[in-house]
Length: 490
Image 1 (cartoon, rainbow, N blue to C red):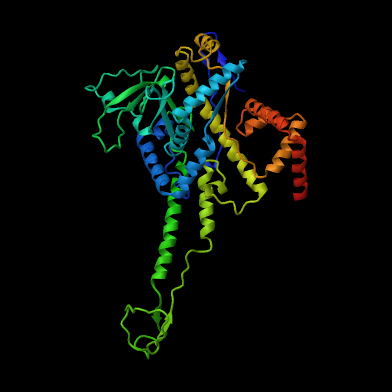
Image 2 (cartoon, helix red, strand yellow):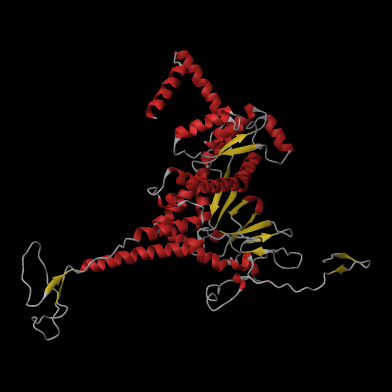
C-alpha cells in the first residue's frame, strides 16, 4: 500500500522503498543495437537544438530546397496549400455596416503590404528553417492610412550578440530566473515567468557579403515580434527545420539518381568490344590490348582471326529504379503529412477512394496549420492594425473606436481560407444538398469549406436572382436543363 501525506510536524512522508523490476527490450543495449542508439542522449530541448545544430540543419535544408526539385516542389506546394491566395477577415459583431468597413479597409491594407505573399514566405521558412520571424513596424511609404507593416527577418539574424556577454560590450541587462540563471536562449530573453520579453536582432545578416559584417543589433520588444515555429518538446524555444528527418533521404535520392546516370553513361561510352575465347598465345591474331578503333556509321567490316564483336549491356536504370524513388519520396513526404501523389505530383497509381483517404490526413494537417497561423500571426496583426486605426480621425466608425478604446481584446472575428476543390464536384454537390436537407450542416459551414463568406455570397445571389427576374430568365428552366444533362451522362 502507498501512503502520501504529512505528519503532525508537517514533514512529508515518503512511501516505503520498493524495488520495481521491469524489462523493456527497447531499453536493452546489445552488441547488435549499440551502434544504432549511439547518438541517443538526454539533452534538454534547447541544448539538443543549440545554435550550432540549428545552423547546420538550416544550411543543409536550404541547400536541398535550392538544388533538389522535389524538395523545392514539396516546400512551395505546402505553403501554397496552407496560405493559398491569403486569408480573408470576417467580423462577427452585430453591426453589419461597421463590420463591412473593417473588413474592407483591413483587406485593402493587407494587399498593400502583400500580406499573403509574406505568409507564404513564412510558411516556407518554417519548413526549411524551422521558424519564421516578423517584426511589426511602421512604414511611412505605404499607400494606406494605416502605416503598419510586417517586416520579415531570417532566423540567422535572431541571435545573442557577443557584446551582450562581454564585460567590455554594451551594457545590456539580462533578467534572471528564480535560480539566478540567465534566462536567455540564442537571441530571446525571457521574463521570470518564461515568456519572451525581448529579441536581439542583428541589423546585418551574418552571411551578408555586400557589407562588412558588424556586430550591431537592435532589441525588439516581444509585443512587436512575431515568432512562429512548432515546439515538438516542452521547453523548446527555437525551431528546427520540419524537413530535418528527410534531409538524409533527399541526399540518398540525389546520389542514387546520379549513380544510375553515371552507370548508364559508362555503359554507353563503349560502343563495342573485341573479345576472344582462345587462351593466351593461342590461335587468335595478336592485337594491342585496350586499343581504341574509330567506327563509322553503316559500314561493313571484318574482324581479326579468332576475335568476336560484342557490346556492353546497359543494366541501368534497373526495373526497380522508379519504385525505389517512389518509396523514398513517400518517406520524405511523411514528415509533413503530405501524401505521395502531391509530393511527386503524380497520381497515376491512385484511384478515387485511395486518393480521398490519403488526402484526409493532409487536409487535417493544413487546417491545424491555418488555425495556428491565425492564432500566432493573424490575430496579432489584426490587433496591431486596429490599435493604429483607432488613432486616425474619422477612419473607423465611432462605435468601433469607442469599443476599442475601452477593451483591449480583439473583437469577435474569423478567418476564411481558400477551399479545396473536390475530385468529383457532382457527387459533392449531391452530398451537400442532402446535408442541408436533413439539417446536419449550415450554409455558413458549406461556404466556409470553399473559403467564402456566406453573407457576401447570399447577397450576391440575391442580386443575381433579381437581375434574372428583370431580364425574364427563368431559374427553373436552367435547373431542369442541368438535371436532364446529368441524367443523360449517368
